[in-house]
Image 1 (cartoon, rainbow, N blue to C red):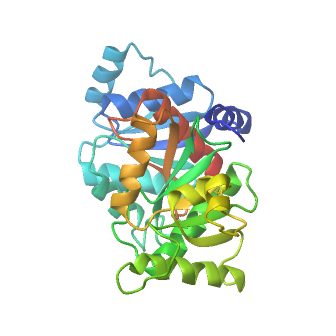
Image 2 (cartoon, rainbow, N blue to C red; image 1 turned 135 degrees about the vertical axis):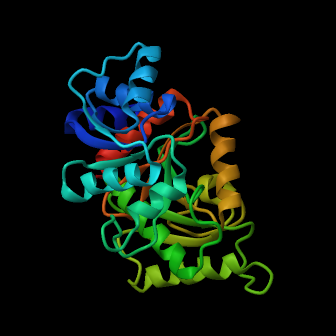
Length: 298
């Protein structure tokens, strides 16, 4: 897949996935779920305050006929109900409505009755940029603040799995830093990057090709890598950009979409099933693309 439009088309071809929307009485989330229904990508199951949901739908001019809806005004109970639907197989994807992200993730990652898969969950954003030759992933821009080495290993694994879902069988993963030289004392992320790259070369990190540390320009520009004499299978052709922390990731993600003219789609990966955490600030197109990505990743 080369564009966000390709993700949407593939999700339509794959058939409708059932998406459980927790506390669906929020206009942007409800609109996104109904857009996915209209596009033939998903069949929403709406959990929440049904009077409020119907009022919002009326304001949107939307038809709720035929949709499964479950009354639950309490946010914590709505999250648990949505998770239970996914866990039981009655739904394929979990989606956030008006409730806080922390409430939804607490229910989703409950080890007893949630969707916990035994590894770290992470935000995976697929980006289509007019300045790059293919789709690429930025991770983690939204969930993990300062992941340690094991956390970064899980982040790499989650991103590689999403890459495969969009057709990249062996993704090239760049572990980003400000410089290529390893400096464990002053820039610990460079040591993590080098270690993960070495673990990949030794077969301990599978299903992808990893290199790092790499500065952003060298990860995405073959010319920059050539000028700096960086010999790498990843440099200039990265499929995945793993940022050192949430601050770098959040700034990069928002700069790409808000200043760089990029399109995006994002999900939380690493749980037993994908989770959609759209923001009210996301464009309508981004929200629909995120649901489509979740449908493919599920």
